[in-house]
Length: 301
Image 1: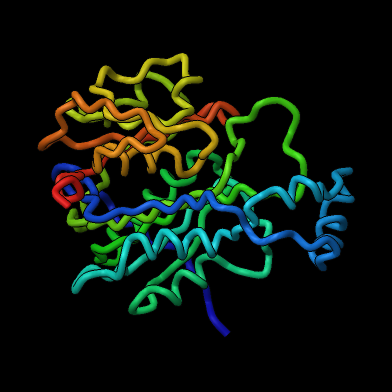
Image 2 (image 1 turned 135 degrees about the vertical axis):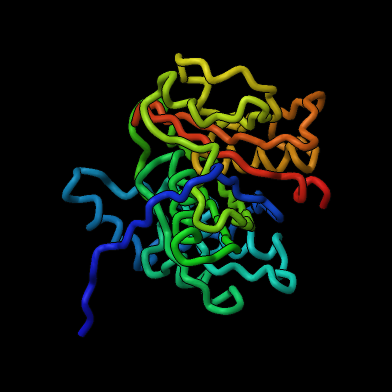
Protein backbone atom coordinates (compact mmCIF):
# COMPACT_ATOMS: atom_id res chain seq x y z
CA UNK A 1 0.00 0.00 0.00
CA UNK A 2 1.10 3.54 -0.62
CA UNK A 3 -0.41 6.99 -0.54
CA UNK A 4 0.17 9.62 -3.18
CA UNK A 5 -0.03 13.28 -2.28
CA UNK A 6 0.09 16.45 -4.31
CA UNK A 7 3.49 17.95 -4.93
CA UNK A 8 4.49 20.75 -2.56
CA UNK A 9 5.29 23.89 -4.53
CA UNK A 10 7.80 26.23 -3.01
CA UNK A 11 7.47 29.95 -3.65
CA UNK A 12 10.19 31.41 -5.82
CA UNK A 13 12.77 33.05 -3.55
CA UNK A 14 13.87 36.59 -4.06
CA UNK A 15 16.91 37.13 -6.20
CA UNK A 16 17.96 36.76 -9.83
CA UNK A 17 17.02 33.75 -11.91
CA UNK A 18 19.73 31.21 -12.70
CA UNK A 19 20.77 29.34 -15.84
CA UNK A 20 21.80 25.68 -16.16
CA UNK A 21 25.39 25.02 -17.16
CA UNK A 22 26.10 22.61 -20.01
CA UNK A 23 29.31 20.80 -19.08
CA UNK A 24 29.45 17.83 -21.46
CA UNK A 25 27.49 16.67 -24.49
CA UNK A 26 27.66 14.07 -27.25
CA UNK A 27 25.62 12.90 -30.21
CA UNK A 28 25.05 9.57 -31.93
CA UNK A 29 23.68 9.24 -35.48
CA UNK A 30 24.26 5.80 -37.04
CA UNK A 31 24.02 5.72 -40.81
CA UNK A 32 25.19 2.23 -41.75
CA UNK A 33 22.83 -0.54 -42.92
CA UNK A 34 20.89 -2.44 -40.31
CA UNK A 35 20.49 -6.20 -40.19
CA UNK A 36 18.35 -7.75 -42.96
CA UNK A 37 14.65 -7.85 -42.20
CA UNK A 38 13.01 -11.25 -41.91
CA UNK A 39 9.28 -11.23 -42.85
CA UNK A 40 6.97 -13.10 -40.55
CA UNK A 41 8.36 -11.58 -37.39
CA UNK A 42 5.89 -11.86 -34.52
CA UNK A 43 5.72 -8.07 -34.38
CA UNK A 44 4.01 -7.95 -37.78
CA UNK A 45 0.82 -9.39 -36.34
CA UNK A 46 1.02 -6.96 -33.45
CA UNK A 47 1.37 -3.97 -35.81
CA UNK A 48 -1.56 -5.17 -37.91
CA UNK A 49 -3.75 -5.42 -34.82
CA UNK A 50 -2.51 -2.07 -33.55
CA UNK A 51 -3.42 -0.21 -36.74
CA UNK A 52 -6.69 -2.02 -37.58
CA UNK A 53 -9.00 0.10 -35.35
CA UNK A 54 -7.74 3.24 -37.13
CA UNK A 55 -7.84 1.85 -40.67
CA UNK A 56 -4.05 1.94 -40.95
CA UNK A 57 -2.15 -0.98 -42.47
CA UNK A 58 1.25 -2.25 -41.47
CA UNK A 59 3.75 -0.98 -44.05
CA UNK A 60 6.22 -3.85 -44.32
CA UNK A 61 8.30 -2.29 -47.08
CA UNK A 62 8.74 0.97 -45.16
CA UNK A 63 9.52 -0.88 -41.95
CA UNK A 64 12.06 -3.19 -43.63
CA UNK A 65 13.81 -0.22 -45.27
CA UNK A 66 14.19 1.61 -41.97
CA UNK A 67 17.14 1.45 -39.62
CA UNK A 68 15.12 -0.54 -37.05
CA UNK A 69 17.30 0.78 -34.26
CA UNK A 70 15.33 1.07 -31.05
CA UNK A 71 15.26 4.14 -28.86
CA UNK A 72 17.16 2.17 -26.24
CA UNK A 73 19.94 1.39 -28.73
CA UNK A 74 20.15 5.05 -29.76
CA UNK A 75 20.17 6.26 -26.15
CA UNK A 76 22.96 3.80 -25.35
CA UNK A 77 24.92 5.10 -28.35
CA UNK A 78 24.68 8.67 -27.07
CA UNK A 79 25.72 7.57 -23.57
CA UNK A 80 28.71 5.69 -24.99
CA UNK A 81 29.70 8.81 -26.97
CA UNK A 82 29.36 10.90 -23.82
CA UNK A 83 31.67 8.56 -21.95
CA UNK A 84 31.58 7.51 -18.31
CA UNK A 85 30.95 10.33 -15.87
CA UNK A 86 33.96 11.69 -14.06
CA UNK A 87 34.14 11.78 -10.29
CA UNK A 88 31.30 13.93 -9.01
CA UNK A 89 29.57 14.05 -12.42
CA UNK A 90 27.16 11.10 -12.11
CA UNK A 91 23.66 12.46 -12.77
CA UNK A 92 21.09 12.45 -10.00
CA UNK A 93 18.26 12.66 -12.53
CA UNK A 94 17.93 11.48 -16.16
CA UNK A 95 15.09 12.63 -18.41
CA UNK A 96 14.57 11.15 -21.87
CA UNK A 97 12.69 13.18 -24.50
CA UNK A 98 11.38 11.93 -27.84
CA UNK A 99 8.93 13.10 -30.50
CA UNK A 100 8.04 9.80 -32.22
CA UNK A 101 7.08 6.51 -30.54
CA UNK A 102 9.44 3.55 -30.62
CA UNK A 103 8.50 0.59 -32.81
CA UNK A 104 9.73 -1.72 -30.03
CA UNK A 105 7.13 -1.77 -27.24
CA UNK A 106 8.82 -4.29 -24.95
CA UNK A 107 11.53 -1.92 -23.70
CA UNK A 108 11.26 1.16 -21.51
CA UNK A 109 14.01 3.60 -22.38
CA UNK A 110 14.14 5.24 -18.95
CA UNK A 111 14.48 1.90 -17.14
CA UNK A 112 17.20 0.71 -19.50
CA UNK A 113 19.11 3.99 -19.26
CA UNK A 114 18.90 3.95 -15.48
CA UNK A 115 20.67 0.59 -15.41
CA UNK A 116 23.54 2.07 -17.42
CA UNK A 117 24.10 5.01 -15.06
CA UNK A 118 26.02 4.81 -11.78
CA UNK A 119 24.05 5.32 -8.62
CA UNK A 120 20.65 4.39 -10.06
CA UNK A 121 19.31 7.95 -10.53
CA UNK A 122 15.67 8.82 -10.93
CA UNK A 123 14.83 8.36 -14.63
CA UNK A 124 11.70 8.92 -16.69
CA UNK A 125 10.64 9.97 -20.19
CA UNK A 126 8.58 12.78 -21.74
CA UNK A 127 6.82 12.70 -25.11
CA UNK A 128 3.70 13.88 -26.99
CA UNK A 129 4.88 17.48 -27.34
CA UNK A 130 6.51 17.16 -30.73
CA UNK A 131 9.71 19.08 -31.35
CA UNK A 132 9.22 21.03 -28.11
CA UNK A 133 9.44 17.94 -25.90
CA UNK A 134 13.14 18.42 -25.01
CA UNK A 135 12.41 21.96 -23.79
CA UNK A 136 9.72 20.64 -21.46
CA UNK A 137 12.05 17.86 -20.32
CA UNK A 138 14.72 20.39 -19.40
CA UNK A 139 12.23 22.46 -17.43
CA UNK A 140 11.00 19.39 -15.55
CA UNK A 141 14.58 18.32 -14.80
CA UNK A 142 15.50 21.70 -13.34
CA UNK A 143 12.29 21.86 -11.30
CA UNK A 144 13.20 18.50 -9.75
CA UNK A 145 16.68 19.85 -9.01
CA UNK A 146 15.27 22.99 -7.39
CA UNK A 147 12.94 21.03 -5.14
CA UNK A 148 15.25 18.12 -4.29
CA UNK A 149 18.54 19.97 -3.88
CA UNK A 150 20.14 18.22 -6.88
CA UNK A 151 22.77 19.67 -9.18
CA UNK A 152 23.66 17.01 -11.79
CA UNK A 153 21.16 16.36 -14.57
CA UNK A 154 21.18 14.29 -17.75
CA UNK A 155 18.96 15.13 -20.72
CA UNK A 156 18.73 12.43 -23.41
CA UNK A 157 16.97 13.38 -26.67
CA UNK A 158 16.09 10.65 -29.17
CA UNK A 159 14.78 10.58 -32.75
CA UNK A 160 13.92 7.00 -33.71
CA UNK A 161 13.10 7.06 -37.42
CA UNK A 162 11.67 3.59 -38.09
CA UNK A 163 7.88 3.48 -38.11
CA UNK A 164 5.64 0.53 -39.05
CA UNK A 165 2.87 2.73 -40.47
CA UNK A 166 2.83 5.21 -43.39
CA UNK A 167 3.26 8.86 -42.39
CA UNK A 168 0.35 11.33 -42.67
CA UNK A 169 -0.25 12.83 -46.10
CA UNK A 170 1.58 16.08 -46.69
CA UNK A 171 4.77 17.39 -45.15
CA UNK A 172 4.69 17.38 -41.36
CA UNK A 173 7.02 19.18 -38.92
CA UNK A 174 7.26 15.85 -37.09
CA UNK A 175 8.69 14.04 -40.13
CA UNK A 176 11.65 11.88 -39.19
CA UNK A 177 14.62 11.11 -41.42
CA UNK A 178 16.91 8.55 -39.87
CA UNK A 179 18.06 7.95 -36.31
CA UNK A 180 19.83 10.25 -33.86
CA UNK A 181 20.33 10.77 -30.14
CA UNK A 182 21.96 13.51 -28.07
CA UNK A 183 23.12 13.32 -24.45
CA UNK A 184 23.51 16.55 -22.46
CA UNK A 185 25.11 16.57 -19.02
CA UNK A 186 24.03 19.67 -17.10
CA UNK A 187 24.85 21.23 -13.76
CA UNK A 188 22.25 23.27 -11.91
CA UNK A 189 23.89 25.60 -9.40
CA UNK A 190 20.97 27.91 -8.76
CA UNK A 191 19.67 26.13 -5.67
CA UNK A 192 15.99 26.88 -5.31
CA UNK A 193 16.18 30.07 -7.38
CA UNK A 194 13.89 30.19 -10.42
CA UNK A 195 15.04 28.97 -13.83
CA UNK A 196 15.83 31.89 -16.11
CA UNK A 197 16.12 32.44 -19.83
CA UNK A 198 13.29 30.14 -20.86
CA UNK A 199 9.65 30.22 -21.90
CA UNK A 200 7.14 28.18 -23.87
CA UNK A 201 3.78 29.10 -25.37
CA UNK A 202 1.98 30.88 -28.20
CA UNK A 203 4.32 33.21 -30.12
CA UNK A 204 4.02 36.85 -29.14
CA UNK A 205 6.15 39.73 -27.83
CA UNK A 206 5.43 38.86 -24.20
CA UNK A 207 6.87 35.36 -24.69
CA UNK A 208 10.33 36.85 -25.20
CA UNK A 209 10.45 38.71 -21.87
CA UNK A 210 13.01 36.21 -20.55
CA UNK A 211 15.13 36.04 -23.72
CA UNK A 212 18.66 37.30 -22.82
CA UNK A 213 19.55 40.16 -25.12
CA UNK A 214 23.25 39.25 -25.12
CA UNK A 215 22.75 35.57 -26.05
CA UNK A 216 23.75 33.77 -29.24
CA UNK A 217 21.01 31.76 -30.97
CA UNK A 218 20.83 28.11 -32.00
CA UNK A 219 17.74 28.01 -34.23
CA UNK A 220 15.72 24.85 -34.66
CA UNK A 221 14.41 24.05 -38.14
CA UNK A 222 10.87 24.89 -37.03
CA UNK A 223 11.70 28.59 -36.67
CA UNK A 224 11.52 28.81 -40.46
CA UNK A 225 7.72 28.46 -40.12
CA UNK A 226 7.44 31.25 -37.56
CA UNK A 227 5.91 34.55 -38.70
CA UNK A 228 6.56 36.33 -35.38
CA UNK A 229 10.23 37.40 -35.41
CA UNK A 230 12.44 36.34 -32.53
CA UNK A 231 14.55 38.99 -30.79
CA UNK A 232 17.56 40.17 -32.83
CA UNK A 233 20.34 37.89 -31.68
CA UNK A 234 23.57 36.69 -33.27
CA UNK A 235 22.79 33.42 -35.10
CA UNK A 236 25.20 30.74 -33.97
CA UNK A 237 23.77 27.70 -35.79
CA UNK A 238 20.68 26.31 -37.48
CA UNK A 239 19.37 22.79 -36.98
CA UNK A 240 18.68 20.49 -39.93
CA UNK A 241 15.17 19.36 -40.88
CA UNK A 242 14.06 15.77 -40.37
CA UNK A 243 15.15 15.66 -36.71
CA UNK A 244 12.19 17.06 -34.78
CA UNK A 245 13.58 16.23 -31.34
CA UNK A 246 17.37 16.19 -31.82
CA UNK A 247 17.88 18.79 -34.58
CA UNK A 248 18.32 21.83 -32.33
CA UNK A 249 20.55 20.00 -29.89
CA UNK A 250 22.76 18.51 -32.58
CA UNK A 251 23.19 22.04 -33.91
CA UNK A 252 24.20 23.18 -30.43
CA UNK A 253 26.86 20.45 -30.26
CA UNK A 254 28.14 21.24 -33.73
CA UNK A 255 28.32 24.95 -32.98
CA UNK A 256 30.22 24.59 -29.74
CA UNK A 257 32.57 22.03 -31.29
CA UNK A 258 32.87 24.12 -34.48
CA UNK A 259 32.48 21.02 -36.64
CA UNK A 260 29.32 22.07 -38.44
CA UNK A 261 28.47 18.50 -39.47
CA UNK A 262 24.98 18.55 -40.98
CA UNK A 263 24.40 22.00 -39.57
CA UNK A 264 24.85 25.56 -40.75
CA UNK A 265 27.28 27.12 -38.25
CA UNK A 266 27.91 30.86 -38.28
CA UNK A 267 31.55 30.79 -37.27
CA UNK A 268 31.82 34.59 -37.21
CA UNK A 269 29.59 34.86 -34.11
CA UNK A 270 31.61 35.48 -30.97
CA UNK A 271 30.10 33.48 -28.13
CA UNK A 272 32.89 33.78 -25.58
CA UNK A 273 31.33 34.65 -22.26
CA UNK A 274 27.82 34.80 -23.76
CA UNK A 275 24.93 32.47 -22.93
CA UNK A 276 23.40 30.44 -25.75
CA UNK A 277 19.66 30.32 -26.47
CA UNK A 278 18.21 27.22 -28.15
CA UNK A 279 14.81 27.88 -29.72
CA UNK A 280 12.32 25.99 -31.87
CA UNK A 281 8.76 26.37 -33.11
CA UNK A 282 6.13 23.64 -33.61
CA UNK A 283 3.76 24.64 -36.39
CA UNK A 284 1.19 21.94 -35.61
CA UNK A 285 0.84 23.14 -32.02
CA UNK A 286 1.50 26.82 -32.80
CA UNK A 287 3.89 26.89 -29.86
CA UNK A 288 7.42 28.22 -29.47
CA UNK A 289 9.95 27.24 -26.82
CA UNK A 290 13.39 28.47 -25.92
CA UNK A 291 15.91 27.84 -23.17
CA UNK A 292 19.27 29.34 -22.26
CA UNK A 293 22.55 27.72 -21.19
CA UNK A 294 25.97 28.67 -19.99
CA UNK A 295 28.20 26.74 -22.41
CA UNK A 296 31.69 28.06 -21.65
CA UNK A 297 32.87 24.84 -20.05
CA UNK A 298 31.58 22.79 -22.99
CA UNK A 299 33.48 24.95 -25.47
CA UNK A 300 36.67 24.67 -23.44
CA UNK A 301 36.46 20.88 -23.73
